[in-house]
Image 1 (tube, one colour):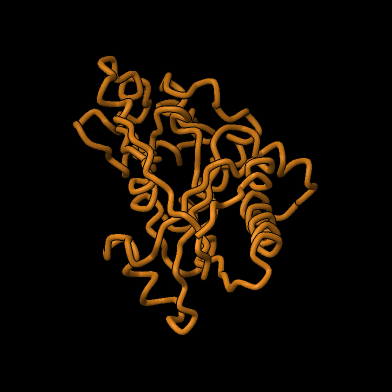
Image 2: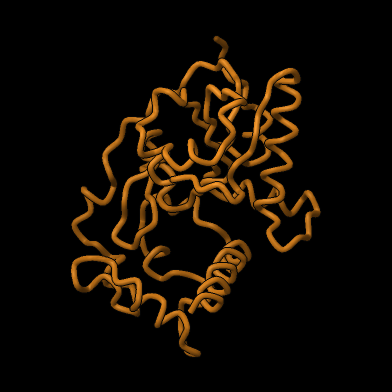
Length: 231
């Protein structure tokens, strides 16, 4: 068993990494994976890779990738290169991004990265909501599994709940998140949340890592496009 060297990934902005033994993960967290990946590969581990803050976006821009999904494409390329260099004789397969379902939030909770927030984004005590899951890799590696980060949800200590009051759609006024209100408001011509989420940006947790305007426009234009596609 060896420690993973994630230096190259962190340098490229993919600065969150967790290693799990597949046979130690809760069955419900990997049920879909076990139905979809080829058991003949006998993968032993799952490597979860994410990013926190702005550095990934800066690396994506510097790379010159101009595809429809530059963050996904950059992340897959970077992780693929890292894996080939670190484990040249080892089998591995990137399943996310991709067609195989992966319960990212469940994996994030197991890693200790993810707590629920009122506006349905994962929140982290260090990064706030300014982090994301980027790659799930199945591999026949023998890395030392990660210890879960131990932290309480920042929302449990928040008395003001400014995010609820800041949502122009009133999507959290009923005590839980009303997705239909959020979507309905975002689709309005006069919506203030076409290229942002006012509830999210109002949250003070991790505000030093808040995405810049360009990254926000990119992320929320994708989500709005998906809303329009399926509405």
